[in-house]
Image 1 (tube, rainbow, N blue to C red):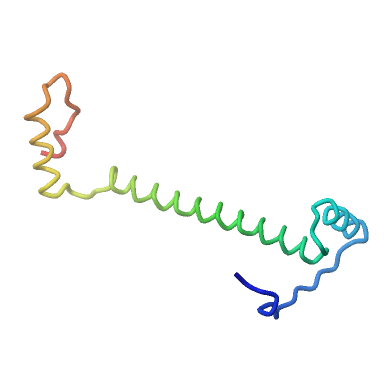
Image 2 (image 1 turned 90 degrees about the vertical axis):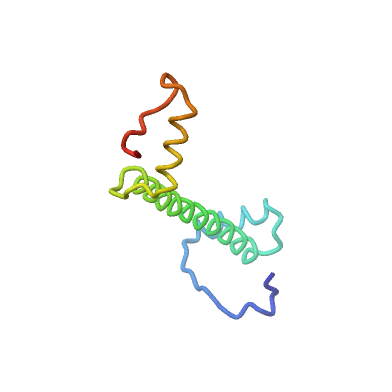
Length: 104
């Protein structure tokens, strides 16, 4: 965890008096000891949420692309998959099995 001695960077903001009053009011209600600590806590919390959400969406899109490429792509089944399809056909009764003719 970062301590106050690690804090060497600054961010300067220009805000309206109305916004400043709103931020101060929220800081007092929240119990934070200073406006700076309140703003830092809120900004950090929200940015972590944004990053987590966007990273999750990116991973989901990547997974979806991999899945659809695997299912609908022009990739030929390997020998293990072909053997598994043959074993499946031998084990499952004709009324139970799904179409695997493309794997044979």
